[in-house]
Image: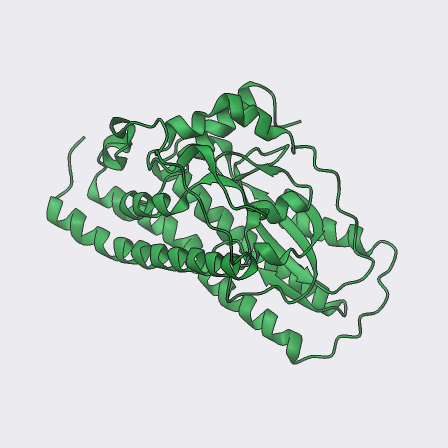
Length: 335
């Protein structure tokens, strides 16, 4: 396959690199804020990292260009257009979510008793917008990032499936495009649910999937929607790790009960599997946990190591790909 003009290719990549660098800085800042709230909650505790970086050898690091191959310059343009369309929609809907949140302070909310079928109607409406699973919990302050907040205690957690066939091609373009598509679609569904709750007379805060104010995998686990694997991602009983998460905080009464978590034992499988550890191109997943004593946050994932890789190669999802495949092959998800 012919290589594009190197100068034009590099010139075209500059805006994307700058955007990803800003995104990386934002994520690092969010993580710093999270550690701040942890330090305030547990001032005498420390975060202990393992000595080694796990068994992943440097020669296993996947070079994005080597993996997917060069494509003609105009194909680069086409791919970027495909990626930018949902990104632009998501940015617009993210701004809308801020307006929805602010409207909680500008309107009158009567908080009437909900009709008997209210939550059934909520779920039907939300599923019509493409949401694959819904759970209910209450806010856990230790999962909220520092400097951010959940305005109301009742939390509706939404998850939306990402297409398995697209993610199976990660870290190639199809996986990145599918991830961005789901981010945009789930942002819109989250806003729609918040608006519906407000129109029904209740306060509501949309918590969008891209960025967000809270540690989503553990929030979803609290709602009975699955449990995080070694890679730190939620593993749902239907979709495995191939999903994205959002939430809506509300003061709507007669809140549904949290359902039993059928995936709480998945970590036992992770202990014997560990394919995400061996496949991680950024060497970001440890065989032993990063411990935070007296905290619900226990993880094998050092996500600071993800940011440089994603910023450089524009996409990853390798851990999602290998995890989803083995779970499907062993019939542990999809029932």
